[in-house]
View (cartoon, rainbow, N blue to C red):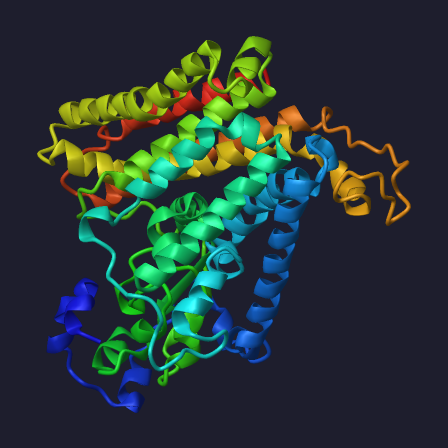
Length: 477
């Protein structure tokens, strides 16, 4: 591979070659980190492609069945497996399990890119010597999170119908599969996952708070290895040595499987280890993505759990004057209001602290404060939205198409969990946890940036406090 593709590590040409024995002696174990790949019984499972292939095949078959059920099953959302499993079971598991504890672990199992990836590489487990398709590089101007931001915004705009109409859900999934296949045949690697997928944007930004990371054990050993088999084999086109945080890595483990020096670690680490570090980048795509996640969970909480019937009807009546008003409000909230208020708070912080850092760079840096808050807000919303509907999972397993089947002989079950006794307290506690976690990240940013005073992040924390109070009001009352 051309060295210009390793733009994240331009210093590699100046690296001093080391023998394996010398490099092994320079490895350092990070405190409070546990390398899962170093556990003897677990390492073979991580290195083998078969367990992952079986799980991926299972999820692929499940999503295909969900599409069929959505297209031909009952139009009543609570009686169709497409709605219950995608927006209740899977979406809940993503926000409560996969992301908080596994980062981008769902990306290692996601079936959407699989057909295109198999076509692209000309095989399932092994790649063909000559890849199929045009294998073009993704345009530089389209890199970053902007397209994922737009895709999630688009899905959120029609979320009231998507989350309740099985056929709309099926068509959305078909569109994602078709787009992933098309992009795999035109561009190299997983262009769809890296730059387009709205779920990829959602998982990537919050993966920085998760207790899982993939890193190299010894940077000098990695730099001295001239073949770069890890980069050549990575379906994401990532170079492990250049990883600064966990937002891009999809945890596919290909680099672990092909590294000849046994130099890849899969670490369990403290929560939020990527956050609170001063960053040199002035890119605002991640800041806008983080703000849009806050705006979306605010809007969803108001529509799906709020007491305003007219607002809920407006979100459902697509194309009506009421929906146009809702759409304008949703877009204004995510594109203008929240970014404007956050920019104003960051600007106020720079004025108070008399910092000499450009506003754009400060805003990009302080957007890290928003991530714990956003993740906890989504978890709190999920408790109020999805938990009361968990009982539907059993009924759709017995009758997945809503055709009156009773495969598991449980159709007469009327059990429904009562979450009212613990939901408000748990939601308030989670929102409070997110606020304190964000304050902790702000404190770490102050310590990392010696040029700024402790007052610089105070206005941004006031922004977080106001958001938390509004969420508390929407969810608990």
